[in-house]
Length: 249
Image (cartoon, rainbow, N blue to C red; front, side, top):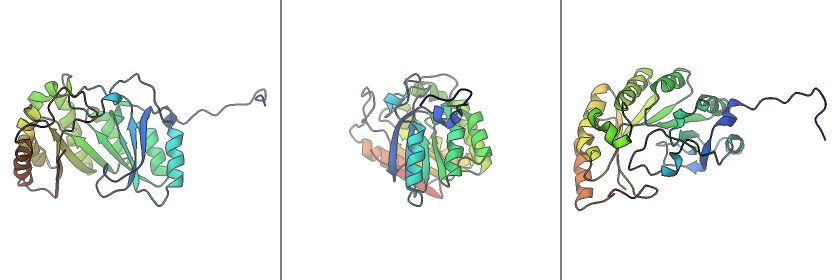
């Protein structure tokens, strides 16, 4: 039936503008000790050579999943899921992420966030508003090597600013570093962990890069690589954390 003359169409929620590349209805690996739905957002301004979600980097690719599908999933999973993890791509790239997080909280779920730390101001706003319960923050390398890892200049200061903001907020935080054989990520990992620990972080994870979903232009393995990573992990764990996790490929 045609809309009656003078009838008004209610505007969509701002969260409906979120460009979503994929939705995992149930995950045990995206937030330690939590059962979550995981929302993969489209677009990232960085171009990390070892990224395992390369299809999510282009910022102009339209979304493949409607936010309404997330709403519907959560309505069915009350009492079954602990929360929702917003990841990417880089979830903080999209202005409407806060609206999406608020909807999740209003439905009674917790919100986790994976971020590379490139938007410290937006991150401060999000945690300051109480819209995020846990953050997994990537710290990829020492400041002097950041550009060669992420492919963009002036990145390191934003990441360390994000770390400072999270520590000041008291938000539950896991800092992660991913390492690649023969690369500065591996050379820097122990020193990165030491600086992160000195800054006040108390939960840390060391991760081996994986080849699946990447460009395939780098070696994900090398002779002696597992043993080298185990030595890195031992040196990092010895710094003294409330929780340390080593994640091999």
